[in-house]
Image (cartoon, rainbow over all chains, first blue to last red; front, side, top):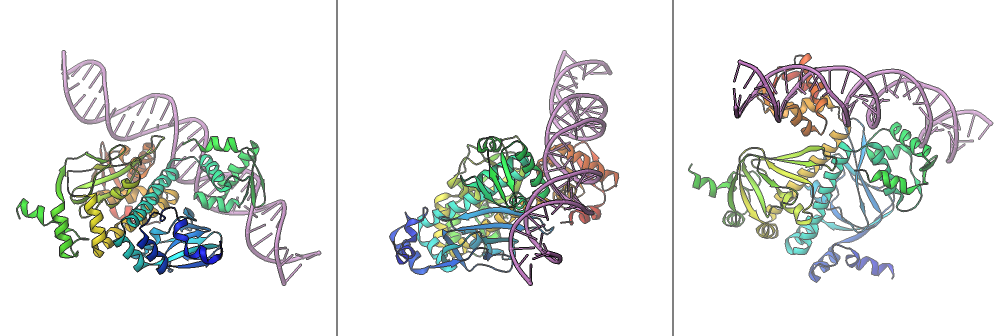
Length: 225
Length: 225
DNA sequence: TGCTAACAGTGACAATGTCACATAGACGCG
DNA sequence: CGCGTCTATGTGACATTGTCACTGTTAGCA
């Protein structure tokens, strides 16, 4: 498969879009452009509205928020095969909201102009379905996150996050500071919890990495919700 | 103005809808029905999906969540002039989500069937705009809520909530228990904070009511964010 | 080599959450 | 009226989490 083919056939490889009507697919392909961005690119944020809606072909976008008090928290991630539906729609109404989207790795995405997005919503029932499903997923995820932040213990949340970030591997490259932003807490809290996990021989720490030694125990703790 | 007129002209009195195309308004009026529900009606919730999208004409709907641990938290309210856009859309995809909508007072609403909603989104650019603006508002509000729950001090949040619930009046009919659900905390925490507010002569408590004595001071504390 | 960031550890304390109670008002009913 | 029985609120002990002011450690680089 050469690069040309990949760039024109991306719609087929997109879980939510492959079942669109042929004319809709054609419109999407014709009116979109594939763009690439290096790691750490700020895709949208305060004072930087995106003009396009993105469909992520590869890479990950991290969406996080900085509060007025200087505290940070990661809201969610957009992975390959997902779309930034809400960024377009949101910034339609409020371009001064405080969240920002950052490329967590090199990102390739199909950019669909706002106008085309609107046309597609009007024309295609299945595209409408795709869009509303994306909104639904996002909102229910935010509901779950509120519940977690408000009621879940820190050790459970950290265990959960370690499992999630590990993606099946045992070595996680991250710092206590970054983990604290993931969970919206203080670095010291992460340090204490990781020390406790290390004392129990569930993890092993070294500068900039956390190594999972006993995944089963972490999963057991993470399941407490 | 007699009841008949009210029921047929509600679109005009709806902030987000009055500027719709005449044909769209007509469709909305023809294909919707005005319904009434008494206080405490569960409008949607686990095992009770709404088939219609509601436009609130009068009254308030409280949307709250019960976590698996038994903790409750109020997510947001829908007031007269607003719509339950996301309930329809959400339940389109996930009808097992844990949030529930409760009529906080007697409610009158225009019910729009799902199919009509879909047709309207397809036909009318300004209805699309209305829908996406509603989604945007909801999502940015949820972002703010996450920030508040994660980083705001309890006294600031309580002061803010008291101001909000008072709606300009000085007497608030509520219990410590209900206030704790509003903020997703424990009753004891509310009791302690209210005692401190009372000690400072900012409020006066009696069984089932909180009376605001010094609104200025409460507002000053609430502004700390 | 030595400087400078970034990363991590620590102890004291404040704020909040949890638990197990005690106390008090409201209200119906014999 | 007196009595139980709710619901609402008060309280103290303790655990967890957040905050602050530090110290020590490591990697990268001029």
